[in-house]
Length: 102
Image 1 (spheres, rainbow, N blue to C red):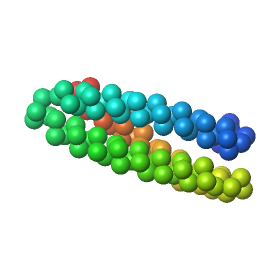
Image 2 (tube, one colour):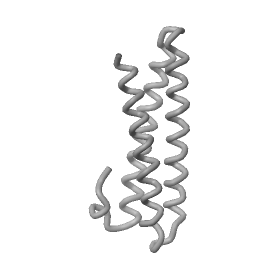
Image 3 (cartoon, rainbow, N blue to C red):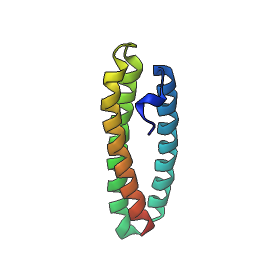
């Protein structure tokens, strides 16, 4: 994720975040398709991982929506909450990718 100083406006930041969320959603959908093709005994683990990813994605999206609704003076404060949710989502995503590649 880009550093705070790289974004001069709320709008620029929102556009960047939306693009990142859209990309991650596509990657999660791709992983779901792979999970559906996995052997039956491994499928449960993959589906659990996908549920965790979906939950964290939803949390990040909620923070993004909060950011969108914020005023110009408050968006920097809300941004830290989004950054935390985004970090957790990315960490879970990387862990899931690692398991799929094994």
